[in-house]
Image (cartoon, rainbow, N blue to C red; front, top):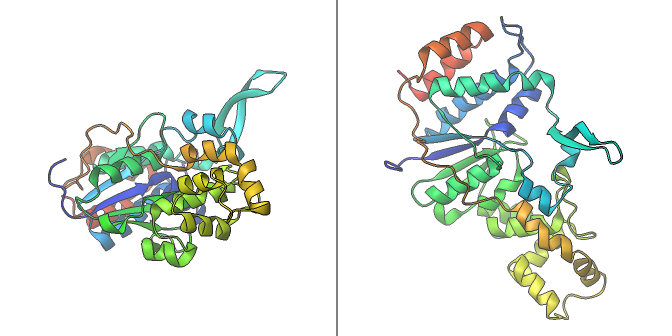
Length: 319
């Protein structure tokens, strides 16, 4: 990609529009469709652009919220977020798992797609992959070329923090986009006692994550996981020490880690984001003009979004 100077802003889009849906009061537009998630996301984009003045921006997309390669590794992955539909086997009640999305949000997602297209903002998704994988790939492609900010409410992306290449996370879970936690290596050291993003991923494997249906190693909590990773340097080195009979790993802790061997074989495939998803050639430059004025006007009128579009247009300095 040419002209990669300035700052790259990567949005974990679903994380942001879910937050907007639950955090912005519902307003029904002239079309009769609620618009709180759309308005909230557009306002978030405006705030982020006003503050950081990115030269490049991507709205990263979940083309698949529960990719097959992760389910194959850990079948419980995200099952708590799913609803079984269209049963195909009466004996097992197996069927198609679909993500549970409130009806009031589901009807807004196509409007979000159109709004991003009208503004000319890149929306990047890859079939068979989550937005996390798109973000991991774009970071891998562009780190070292310009500073990168990842905007998300998902701790999984802390694994991409990389001070040497100016990659940080703007973590919105507590303060939203107006007052996010700035997650760099100092934050990881202070919060978790680990040195970098790679260590965070290894710690997360050991600890598990109930929000993603990952059990972790039974009896190994966050503090113990962090201590083990910092002591041995990586999950791979820890497992090598276990196999070699390191006397420092003993008693109940050794028994727990040995009992979790099969889980530890599989979990990194789930926790680690993909770094080589086929994103193709994508122009991430912030647009200089509205891409489709007619579409933007129609969305604004039909859904009562004029003020939100005006704010984004002003923030982006579009003509």
